[in-house]
Amino acid sequence: MPSPDRSVDVVVVGAGPAGAAAATTLARAGREVLVVDKATFPRDKICGDGLTTAALRELERLGLDPSTVASWVDVDAVLVRSPSGRQVSFPLPSGEGRFAAVARRRDLDERLVALARHAGATCLEGHALSGAEATADGVVVQVEGVGAVRAGWAVGADGMWSPLRRALGLADPTYRGEWHAFRQYFSDVSDAASRQLVVWFEADLLPGYAWSFPLAGGSANVGFGILRGSSYKVADMGALWRELLVRPHIRDFLGATARPEGPHRAWPIPARVDRVALTGPRTLFVGDAAAATDPMTGEGIGQALATGRWAAEAILAAHDPELVRSTYERRVRHELTVDHRLAERLAGVLRHPLGARGAVRLAGATAWTRRNFARWLFEDYPRALLLTPSRWHRDMLTEPGAYR
Ligand SMILES: Cc1cc2nc3c(=O)[nH]c(=O)nc-3n(C[C@H](O)[C@H](O)[C@H](O)COP(=O)(O)OP(=O)(O)OC[C@H]3O[C@@H](n4cnc5c(N)ncnc54)[C@H](O)[C@@H]3O)c2cc1C
Image 1: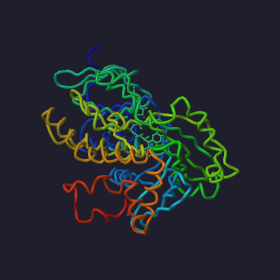
Image 2: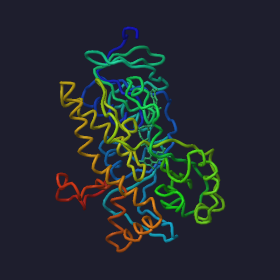
Image 3: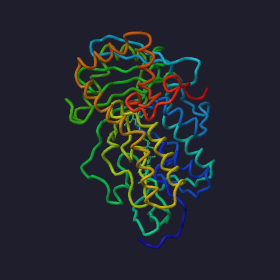
Image 4: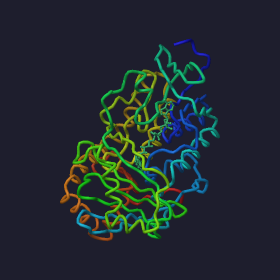
C-alpha cells in the first residue's frame, strides 16, 4: 500500500445508519472524521423501512427531525395474522410520543448523512473502500478516487458484506447471513394498506413472515423473509414471492389498484452478533457489519444506530487501543447478547405453526398483553429485560416513546 496522503482521527466506512451515528457522535465531540461510502445519496437500501421505538429514540438523540423525511409515516398499531387466519391488532401507546414509524431508507439515510456533515464530518460519496491494513498506531485504508488514508481508528459500518472486515482478513468467506428477505414497493394501495402495518405469519414461511408497512402518499413497503435452512431455499424465493402476492388475504389487503413501483429486490440479513469478531486491530465493527440485527424479526436499524454510537463513545472514552476495543465489546455484550439469545429461542418457537398460533393467541389475550406485546415487539425495551435485573430501572415498562 502506498504511503498515505491524508490523515484523520477516524475513518468511517459506510454511511448507512450505523456509520452516520458513529460519524455524527465523533464529529460533535471534535474528532476529525472522514466517512466514505461507495454509493451516492440519496440511495436505496433494501429494507422493510420499519423504525422501532429503539430506533426512534436513537434518531431523536441524533437530532433527526421526522418532518424532514418525505415518506415518514407514524404507526400506532400492528396487525398480526396468525397461521390459522386469526387477526389481532396490537395498539401502541397514544399521546406519549412515537413508538413506531416507517420511512423509505432512500429518504432517511440521506438525512442521516446530512446530520453527519452538519456535525463536521467529511462525507465522501461514490468512493468505495478497496483495501485496509492495520499499522502499529492506526489503520491505513485505500479509498477509490482518494488514495491511501491513515486513521487512528476505523469504524466498519459497511453492511452485511463488510469489505473492511474482508480486507482485514476477519470475514468467514462462506457466510451468507441468517435470513434472506425480499422487498417491493407498491403504489396506489388500499386505504387500509396505506395506514396499517401488518405482519402475516404464513405457515410455510415460519419462523419467517411477510409484511406490508405503510408509507406516505398511498404506498407500501411489502416483503417477506425466510430463515436460511428453513423449508424454502433462497433460490425458491422469486416464485414464492409471486405466489404470496396472490394469496387472498394479502391480495385483498393491498387492494385491486395496487401496482409495483419497480422490481422486487432481495438482500441477506446478518443476525449473529454473539458469534462475530466485533473488533479488529484499531477497528470497530457496527450495524450489519457486526451482524447486529434482531434474530427474531430481522430489524437492524435501531441496532445499527446504537452500535454506531457505542463505537464512537468507546473511541472517545479511552486512549489505550485495547481499552477502546474491550469497552465497545463489553457494551455490545451487555446491551445486545442476552436479548439476541432470547430472540433466537423465540424464533425457534415460531418455527412451528402451533407455536406461532399460540404466541399470537397469548399475546392477544387481554388489552394489557396486547399493549405490552406491541411495545416489546417494537423494541421499546430490550427483549430480555425481565431476565436481566442489572438493566432494571423504575420506569422501565412505562417509558414514553420518542419525540414527545
Ligand atoms: C429486506 C429487508 C428488510 C428489512 N427490514 C427492516 C425493518 O423493517 N426495520 C429494521 O430496523 N431493519 C430492517 N432490515 C435490516 C436493516 O436494513 C439493516 O439492519 C440496516 O440497514 C443496517 O444498517 P447499517 O448502517 O449497518 O448498514 P447499511 O444500511 O447496509 O449501510 C452500509 C453502507 O456501506 C456502504 N458500503 C458497502 N460497501 C462499501 C465499500 N466498499 N466502501 C464504502 N462503502 C461501502 C453501502 O453503500 C451502505 O451505504 C431489513 C433488511 C432487509 C434485507
